[in-house]
Image 1 (spheres, rainbow, N blue to C red):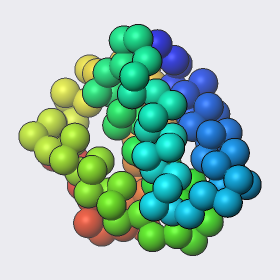
Image 2 (spheres, one colour):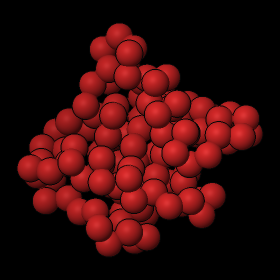
Image 3 (cartoon, rainbow, N blue to C red):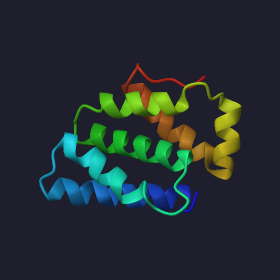
Image 4 (cartoon, rainbow, N blue to C red):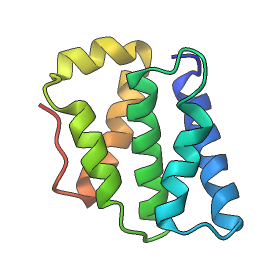
Length: 113
């Protein structure tokens, strides 16, 4: 991951807010934010997982439906065990778990193996 967890979270939140203030709707924000990152150098699956998680948290805050994001996040996490994810995230794992747990409290359709 190029960004540290907290840095990426802050950047995604800023991007979300920027597009939100520009009048983008919930269907437009997701691809707009993803486009900011997915063509970057060394973009990886962990960053993609983080971005979906951070976007879902932002959508929830705005009371927007985030089922599509949860579905994409679930696909990325499918087959990964907690140990796999812990290894992938390293020192940021506790922060990831805190954010992930916050999200799953609000959405029963997502889980981690």
